[in-house]
Length: 110
Ligand SMILES: [Zn+2]
Image 1: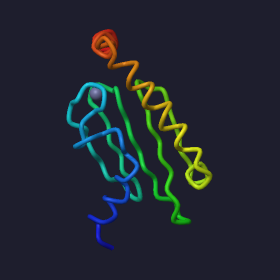
Image 2: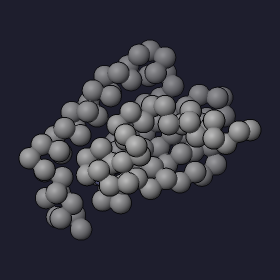
Image 3: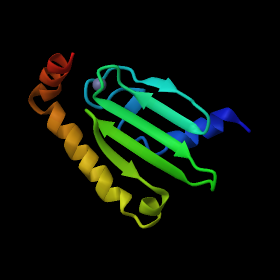
């Protein structure tokens, strides 16, 4: 199996992390590739993305913004429900970036 192609397909739904940078604080994301799984997270814990390749070939996605979780199953994607979840994620990212709220959050949490 071509590992690069596999990584690319894990990537396709991570719309929020342009150039693999945290969509909130813009730090470089840390990537790990456990078996059948891509995990990407921000060291400041703003953003976390996981893509799991299930044994039936479907993928599941988990996003987390400051510990608040958004999960997208293969069924959500097939039914088109994932679009509304993306919208919720965008709103959450916008909230934390607005007036640099994330900075206070990072300072309080550290
Ligand atoms: Zn971050």
